[in-house]
Length: 448
Image 1 (cartoon, one colour):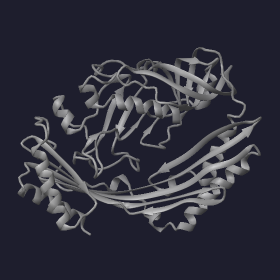
Image 2 (cartoon, rainbow, N blue to C red):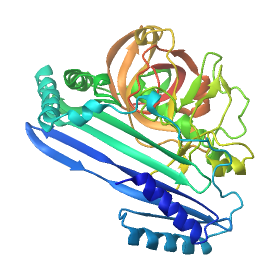
Image 3 (cartoon, rainbow, N blue to C red):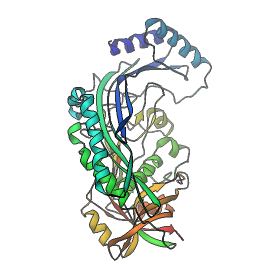
Image 4 (cartoon, rainbow, N blue to C red):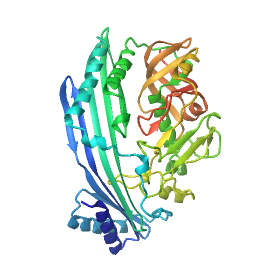
């Protein structure tokens, strides 16, 4: 099935039906997942999802619909309903396709988004990798009682975008991942922890043995965990927790939230929000990046943008709609699936690696908290207030002394940014938002 031709036909139909502007996104692909639990297959599924999303603008009013039925009769009906829907929407002067789009078809091949070897990977090999993770994890320590799940997954997606201003673009992408969750017990108390690896290319994944071993190691390290006295202490955030913190910073840079003054970073453009060694980038052109793409959900070319440079806030993130409201230009951060209209999202958003090792950061702390786990959703993006349950290890005289759990850490996102004292050299993209280990000056630790 030629999805580009289908998209072009729907654009023509929408224009003929009275749409002033329109765009069509078609997404198709393949998804696979296998999960092993207690030596048996718990999940084994494969799907081939596809769908088409239609956005029309008529008299500055929006209509949006989507469908999984790509037959001609269904698409004609979809166009009619969507154009009619626009008549009853609110008038919005900022609606419209991007003001500037590339000429010709954007080429994403240099981004290396597709791994052909995933298409050749058989189910037996996929199950073998999942079983190996479970076996390695169970053999790591006698106190490990079970593996809650050892999973391998992979996917392949093709995306086609066509609009009434003459833009046509398409690209394909693949991804694969390993994950393992482990349970361990001692003295009647249990701990659960996990590890995972996710990449565009199979060859870039950590080995199943390494994922299973790391999941087991992180779980066993928490046995015998206890709480600590309340106080203000330096903290070290491991890469997973630092990435979660950075995800909140990315949310604060959302141009829509900034425009509505719903962000703690409102009115901070051009101002210092971090130390002079802190840089943060948003890069849609990163080779093999998990969020890399040649163009965004509206057809705007992606690029490498500096969000924070030497501690100074340089850019917010925009799609075309919000950029018009803010009287600026799109940053190419419109994200979109076929079942939703475009919205703002970071691409490969990260803090680059620093000069020190993670051990250097820990050795620099006389007494403090090395955080490897967090629970809860205690982040207020309007005020920047941050409060979440945390676990990890207590640092004493520059060494990890004992595991800690059932405590709460609290601060403010701006204070956390300005309080970054050290950045480690262990940057690794396990998701599209990534950070190396970070040392913060202090947070309030609430324990016993």
